[in-house]
Amino acid sequence: MRLKKITIFPVGITKSCVIASRFLSDSGFLITDHISPEITHLLLDIPSFDESDRLKDGSDLQDLLNRLPESVTVIGGNLTHASLSQYQTIDLLADQVYLAKNAAITAECALQVAADYSDTTFADTQVLILGWGRIGKCLTKLLNAIDSKVTVVARKESDRAMAQALGCTSLDFSEVPKHLSQYGVLFNTVPYQTIDCSILNQHEDCIKLDLSSAPGLVCDDIIVARGLPGKYAPKTSGKLIADTIQKALKEVTL
Image (cartoon, rainbow, N blue to C red):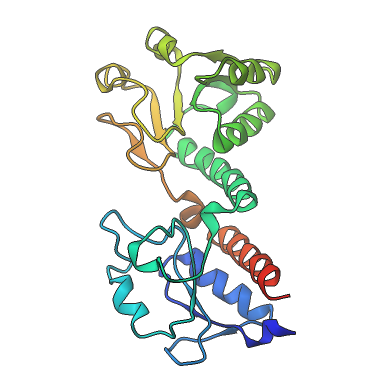
């Protein structure tokens, strides 16, 4: 098996990355903790960079690449860094299967976070979900299962119709301000400001969680809740990372 020639050098510092390395090792992949000519793959955190385009530990990617074999394949998330233009990459955040499964984990963790801030059950709470993407759909599924009163806000009429078909109320974004006072929890999954900050600030009793990528929703009491799988379910997240990497490596080596 050509897979035996693979040597992975993990440098990610998140719990998910550390656990993913363990799963890969248990599956027979060679994991090394030091730089050597035998390294074939570099494993970064998912996502891989902070807002200043540095690795999660604050180091510079190019400095690291300069010490690795030129043929190394880089595994990570959002691998658009300029230093990677000449390298082969495996970008998990471009893998639709990974994104779907990660959305399901994110949704479950988001309910846990919201529950920590709430003094009512979800069955006794009206919930507003901004966006009808992967996370919004997974949230809807979970909340419907526990009899929460869910309203989905979506731009497309077809998306609002689908939410209604699933038993939810639906709104256009322009309708949110006049209805916002009735909701106890708001989950934002849209990566930009869809509701004016001044309007959101008028509703302090509403628990507002931002699950989107930056910049997302902005207001005085927003709870920024990005990267939840790694924080609240690192073992599940790590296994998903490892499974996705194994699948990708088998596709390119067999």
